Length: 154
Image (cartoon, rainbow, N blue to C red):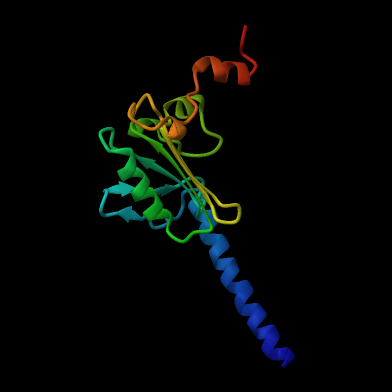
């Protein structure tokens, strides 16, 4: 019985070691994790910093917020926690954390799902999508906001 338990524990630790190695290799760019594509919307969700629950996505500027939200919810599926950060300019998409000032300023969408707390929220840039209901508008950062936060204000 003890030997059986030790054998199970060794298998678990070996499996965890392999998973850990893949995540580390992906984080430093030596191994690519599969990138899920939502066939309905054509969006590609890319994990940021090798995370399995935080994604970036390039959104279609003419897409309807309701369609974006549906694609993101579909992508997050049954995950306990999921965060999606979106941009319309592919050159502005964050590649890693911490994000640069430019990446923060150009971000137009965020979605957060946390089934442990009940949080399920999508927020859009109302500059990008003016018809978005005000309660779904995300706070718009300015360069002055970032300068102040970085201690660069006059």
